[in-house]
Amino acid sequence: MTSPSKHSPDASKQSFFSIEYLQHLYLSPDGRLDRLSYYAGKSFLVFLIFCVFAITSLILPDAFFVVLFITLLPAFIGGILLDIQRLHDLGLNGALFLVKIIPLVGGLFALYMWFAPGNPGLNEYGAIHKSDKRKNQELFVVIFSLIILIIPTIWFHYMMASMPMMRPPMNF
Image 1 (cartoon, helix red, strand yellow):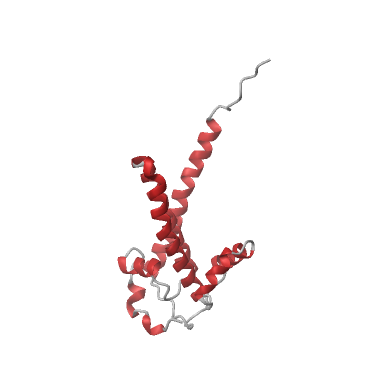
Image 2 (cartoon, rainbow, N blue to C red):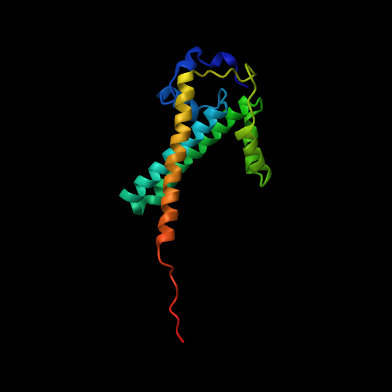
């Protein structure tokens, strides 16, 4: 259990892009994340992974799988820490993130984590500290990440649709 006194009183003044906030977001299980902060944290993580993969595949195609492992391990840990903070916002123990590995139940639990409103006000894990500036920044991160991830999907679909069908030769 995290005591509310561990949270800095100026946390609401931190920018989403500040080093201190990003360190807390991805390197600490303490505190709470409301839905928007959770979406922004997960979106930013996916965006960073996407950028690393895109750059690596262009610059170091032979080392792609090594970079993949080196990138995914810290991203996996950061994602778990985001889940723990989100569970704290729901008033639940952070160890419940393990429920997500159970087939079917884990998927339903993940949906619950994404869409359930958090506890209003103070709970045993602290209070939500957020400024309007950070709320706007988080909303920007979510929208920007979605756009950046949708564009390659549309491009890939277009490229696949415009390619001629590959048919084996017909020998009669």
